[in-house]
Image (cartoon, rainbow, N blue to C red; front, side):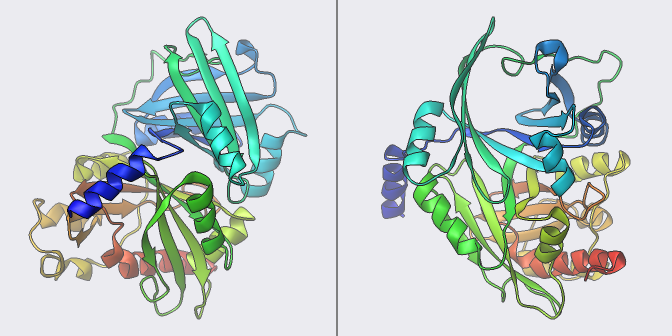
Length: 376
C-alpha cells in the first residue's frame, strides 16, 4: 500500500499533462436549439450561454447548458458545405469534443503533439470583457477530438464568443447529475490496443482495468475493453472494440450506424441514483431493463448495500462491488434515432470499477433491443 501511494504521488508530480477534469462535452447536432431543450427538459440542465450570428459567430449556433459541474454544448451548422453539417450527415447527432480542463492549454498542446498527436487546434487566445480563455486541441479516434481548455483568467458565463443565455419562463429542476464520471469510446476491429498506446504515450494515461471477451460476452456477442485513466485519476476513458461472436455485437452495431469510431456513452455521476433515475423516467428518458430475476440473489452476490432493494428492482438499477466498495448504475436507451449515443447514470459508494458483474445482464438487455431493431 505504501509503495502504491508513493508511486501515485510521483506520477502526479511528473504528469506532463495535468488534467483538472472534464470541462464540457460538445455535441454536433442537426438542431441545437431543440437539442438544448431536450437536455434541459429531460435531463434537468439549465440554460447557460449562447453563441451564434448575434455574437459574431457566422457558421454555427451553439447552446451551452449546465447542471452542477456537468456542461454540455449543443452545436449545429447554419449552412451546408460546413464541417459541422458534414459531421452530422455522416454520424447523426453525436459527441465531437471531449474537452478537458487544464492549467496551461499551450503546454498541453505542445506536450501531446510532440509525442505524436495530430493537431486539431493550435493554442488560441479568446478574449472579451470578462477575461481570456486559451484553447488548443488534438485528434483522437474517429472524428472525435480533445480540446484543452484553460480558463483560470476568465470570469464570464462560459467563454468568449458566447453571451449569457437565460430563459425566464423555462427553468426545469435539476435531476441531481453532478459531473462526468467517464466517457466510453468505440473503436474498430483490432484498434483498441493502438488507442491504448496513444493514450499511454501521447497523454500519459494508465491502463487501470482490462476486460476481454470472456469478461464481456453473452451467448451471441462479445467485446473487449480497456479503461484508460489520467495520472491524477480525474479523467477516465474506457475504450471498446468488437470481439468475435455468433451475432453482431453492440460495438459493431454502433460502428455501422455511426459510420466509424466515436464516443459511445457519457457516464454522469449522482449522489442519489434512485431519485435521479425516478426524475429522469418521469421526464421521458428511457432505460434498459434487466429481468427481475437479476435481483433474486443480488445481495448474495454483492453483500450488504445501504439502499432498499424494492426501488432498485422497480427502476432496473444494477449493483456491483469491488474491493473498495460498491456502485449502482443504469444505462439509457439510445437518445438518437440511430442506435449510437446513450448515457449511463452512476453512483459510486466507494467502488472505483465499472460494473464487471453486471456486464452479462446489461449486454443481454442491449441484445434484446438490437433484436427488436433487426440488428443482432
